[in-house]
Image 1 (cartoon, one colour):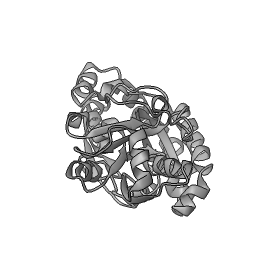
Image 2: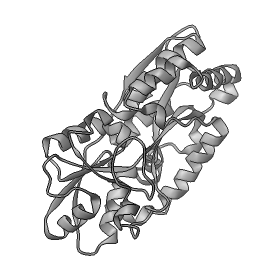
Image 3: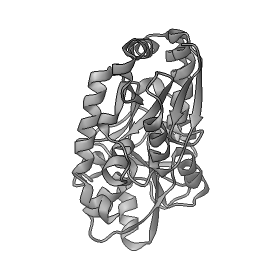
Image 4: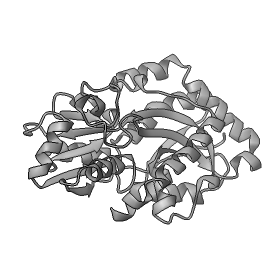
Length: 301
């Protein structure tokens, strides 16, 4: 490389995607022998950053750390000008489960109690994106029970979601445990994860253990992937640059400095999950099919 490589983060600073990117680029700079600059382009549930990546030159000097399923939602439900075929894939980074939180002092301690509370009270639920895994979790819970209705609020990212929860501005919020930041484990109530199995990052119950198996996807469980994406055409036009990015990124996960840094970042090392380009692209297409199944819910939302 003879210039800096821009890493697009389609969220504001301080959220999970931003923190994961900044934990990764120092080691990636070492393995590639390049300088990276992280740029935040928030808005549109990642579409603002997505369009910047889509319009960038496919020369190897622009990549992004993006999220699934938010990226799929932009082309499935938000009329984004791009789709899965418009990008080249470098690799995955980590998979963060979907989890519910409540402000301190709330009159409920877990997800089952919150559902009971919502039957008799007007409740506001904050989500990290207009359409994505957090909104889907809230919609699935609401849709399961005929006698509850949420006031859903899009808080556009992990940082405002965390702030709203800590301040008590919402009755509950949906985020990911690492993205919310486990440093706040004693500051808020962990209501439960949208899963049937426990997760390592936050001491809370999976919804499957709370008698909420009837909520779709609880038995399967789902979360948010982070992945590295490049503008489409890079692999064809500059195969050597593409391979350099792929190989150097894979090497990041073998470096002790990166592992130590992620361990210090609230246990990020526990959810790291690297997959190469082919497996990453397959996951992108699988998530597209997965999100399309819930089109009717999102249209109502």
